[in-house]
Image (cartoon, rainbow, N blue to C red; front, side, top):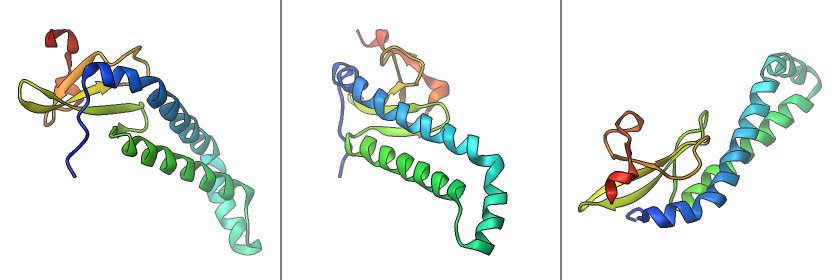
Length: 129
């Protein structure tokens, strides 16, 4: 199935929903990082007594991240980096497929890049006008 293609206006209109999903993903990621020092001891303990609250919490956070990734994919949004909250919206520009690019700390979708250029090749969407 070909990717959903967004206009810049459509990507920005969807951004509040995407931002909430990315926030949930980043929170779950941070929870896992916070649990990390306790994970190996929890694994060792679980082997002997059959369970661990720490492991259960880590698994719950992983499921949250998985659910967010699926929800974003269902919207047609591509997740590029769960560490920085980097997402792309496929779009058409000058007859070719490009990616509108948004990162967690940005107020709106303001950049785009060619499919093969990645984050380093970002250009301002003001060049679209």
